[in-house]
Image 1 (cartoon, rainbow, N blue to C red):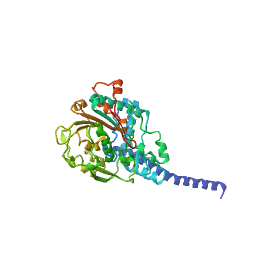
Image 2 (tube, one colour; image 1 turned 120 degrees about the vertical axis):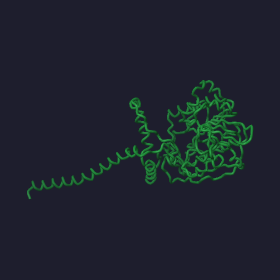
Image 3 (tube, helix red, strand yellow; image 1 turned 180 degrees about the vertical axis):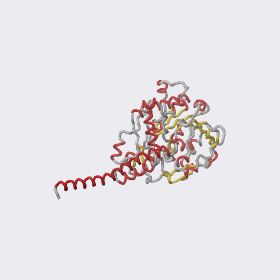
Image 4 (tube, helix red, strand yellow; image 1 turned 30 degrees about the vertical axis):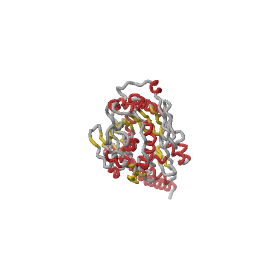
Length: 418
């Protein structure tokens, strides 16, 4: 065979080899393209709920198109948030990512959640200048509300994050990641006071436990002018032992030990009347302050009052009970059963409330503003309560001389009388 024929044969063999390799590559690219196209298509076609029961939060809504939002970039930013929240198979993907990371021993955090060595989960916070500024505005709004309600009868309390108490149980990499994420300094001279040990917070959820709520109650009660009951005045009942909270859902670490939810019961807790003042309907709670049907739901913390409401009224038996105005986030839901032994309560959650807070404040003898630091740092709702109300000056805010709660142990709350 001549050299030319041998060269021609090798060229044909090479072409055949290239063609045989190209087909699988083309098929792979086509499959990848179909998958990439299918994900946004299925996300758009399959209707997703507006509320995530797993994460116990509202999901981002599809953006409304306008030329101004397109030019400013807000449209695509909101579209990205919407796709991130509502993408198909999101929960499965989060869980798979967490499991693979743990299996590969590469795990530091997933979706902003860091595990500790003792089986707890910590939400990572990004303490930015924007967060500090937002916190400062929220605290100022809280103090303005205190002045509006009456400085002489209002207690403003901020519950610090449990993350600080968890730092000792973190690995070195995680501790380094959180090194610059301590709770930011509060404005107007309000200071954090040492208070709650880590056991006062759920391992898998951002809320405090009923033990943590009771610990806060024993310190808040004297400042509200009442004598707190002791532990032996309650019957502690286990509601469930399989609570996996929002931090598990957010991280996908479903293998972490579940939490136990406890209720501090007392004889007369079934006699209270709890009314949704915005609908005018009495809440059908199956166990005093407690919604026992929450045992079958993902969010076991909703056992306290059945969840969040804009404005509820709690009234006990007997006349001449003092009335307490409670401005709160969800932390206070587990605190209300303790305070109700002393007060009739008008509980207002500014996130869902529509009305004039001054009308309610005028009927109350005392007031408590209770917020977790993470909720307060992102809050835009206290300011809404101040619309059409006279503005407080910086000097009048600084003139408020609150009294600090004498907390013990580690990392508790910042509280002041205004």
